[in-house]
Image 1 (cartoon, helix red, strand yellow):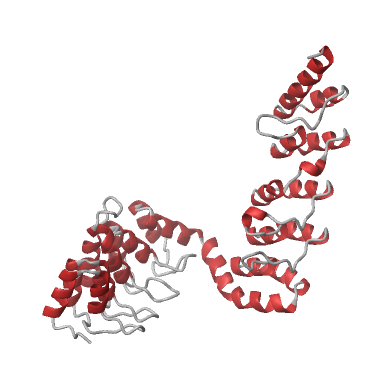
Image 2 (cartoon, helix red, strand yellow):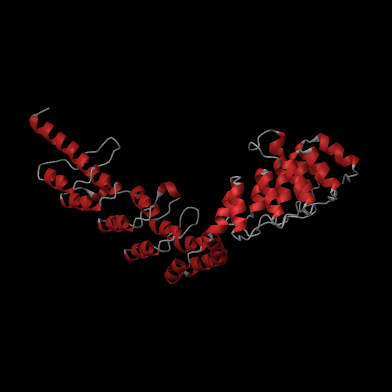
Amino acid sequence: MSPTNDKKSSGVTDLFKAIENAELMAVRELLENEINLEQTDDSGRTPLLLAVDLDNLEIAKVLLNAGADSSCFNEHLMENAIYRRKLDIVSFLIDAGFNVNLRFQENEDRTALMEAAKIGDINMVKKLVEHGADVNAVSRKNHFALMNAACQGWQEIYDYLAPLTSEKLRYWAKKELTSGLIYRKRKDDKLLSNFITASAIRDIEGVLAAIKDGVNINAFGEDETTALFIAANWGYLSIVRALIEAGVNVNLGKEDNRETPLMIAAARTALQKHKLDVDGSDYIEVIKLLIKAGANVNAKTDEVWTALMAAANSGSVEAVKLLLEAGANINHRDCNKDTALSRAKEAGHLNIVKLLREARARKG
């Protein structure tokens, strides 16, 4: 290698170091010499990409003025800036010529505007629209900016984009707005969010603290389930007990299909039977506790599914016995005309088939 090439190589190495250390003056001095600005570091980044990755836009602008090629900017750079809520980087990329309608191929063909609308950054949304972002672009899975704003409950972004969006897309987005606003309200309720999270991770102290602070123990969280449903789903006996002692409605579980905590506990006994449950989970004891607290053993989901059918399908003899003793309707049929007996047969749980027949379950 010639001395000149050694010098160029050394210069690029020094340039990367100066960028990493945010040394603007050193960068300027190095650029006074002949340096290949398209060489890459071990991660495949050019000096310009490195500067943007490190959020050092002042150095990035100096590199651009020195002739760095902005064509290295890709959708990943823009996507990362959006998710990090870096409006300054988004603005920099746009000013440097980034195509605002470029599709994020690894994210279902979404665009920068769709993602900005999803995370709820109104200033970013406006910036993109003002620079030509297509408000009517639709992804492979039928996502579009207004729909994302509606589903996430971002009212301000929805109101801004709605007049700019086609009538057909507005129609579909409007149908989701009400549920989106409910979701946003729940998500932004920190006390409720912390309460739900504490129930999910078996944090009894967190649950009790939230109850003491006045949380609505019967509220549905952002995922449309109650804390009791989540605790029953994981078999967290201590959390279930604490919630019952606090006066929780034991029949409230899933908002979208009316599945109850008793039903999910009965269904999850399959995990306990095959020893696939989370360490410390006890679905049978949860079922006993819920029944004792007055859970409706004949409650039905929108598909007319019951706790007994869930237990029979899961293969838990003990759960089936508990539910029958509590008065579960042995011959109830769901919307597919299935019964606990037919579900047990289909699942191959012969011991439960025998138990149900002995309890006089009808065959037909």
